[in-house]
Image: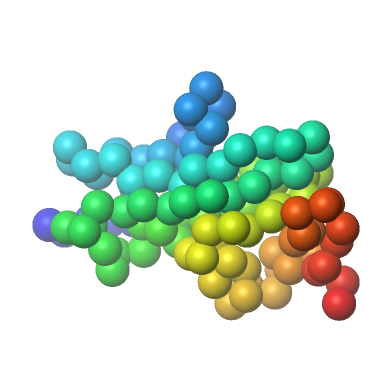
Length: 106
């Protein structure tokens, strides 16, 4: 399946606490839960048929830009989101631990 990631629209589904995009009949998601001023990313899932096309990166980017715009502290429990942050220094200042303590400035 050919996927043009640039044309994908990531939607913030507040009711389901996730960022999502549809590719054909396939739903890809980055799930989270809120705890005060923290957004805890718990799971990212891209259907196997769509892996390797940058869809997870598009979800992570949208989710982290939302967190930045809302001035939320990010707790990356999801390994995919954590890896995305490690490879992009611009998001490290958003990171906090479970208690809300910032780790990004370290």
